[in-house]
Length: 214
Image (tube, rainbow, N blue to C red; front, side):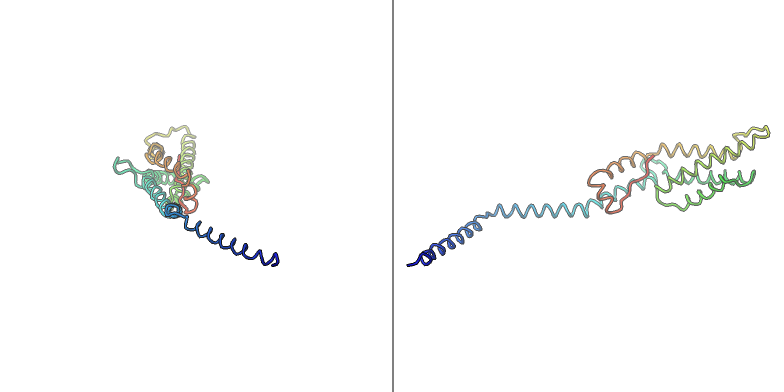
């Protein structure tokens, strides 16, 4: 008998042993191992759902709560909102600008002030409103100082009882109220959370913005 013929039984036996070994390995996977793999898959799915659905909803709700303090104040503590004091400042700035132009005519500063007031009236976003408010306040002070300088150029003294002076005092009073508002501490906490992980990633993906700070 040839060597090739003798080798055939050995080859068949080896294949049978390999098949038997594979079958034993498959049978060797316990229910605990299978359940562990399933648990890992389920955990991964839960994390993905949390990141894609639950976490954005929670971050957006947090954003909206703090934004409402900017717009409406804290009703439980009867604190007026930043928005309310901005609106009060708009009225004072508008009166000041109108009085200055009626007395000494329009200037570049009074024109910019008037345009800024109109933009601020139309703005809804807190960040944009704060930026425009700052611009309005600065130009209001410039218009007031120019008015005062022209008034006193002839030797007279502008009295604090003057309407323009009262408008300027109202602007300063509103500014103090704005700077001391409860909103700022809440916005700082929100922005700190918004800048952490994974909130920074979630906020960027879902367009949940930071809120204005001082």
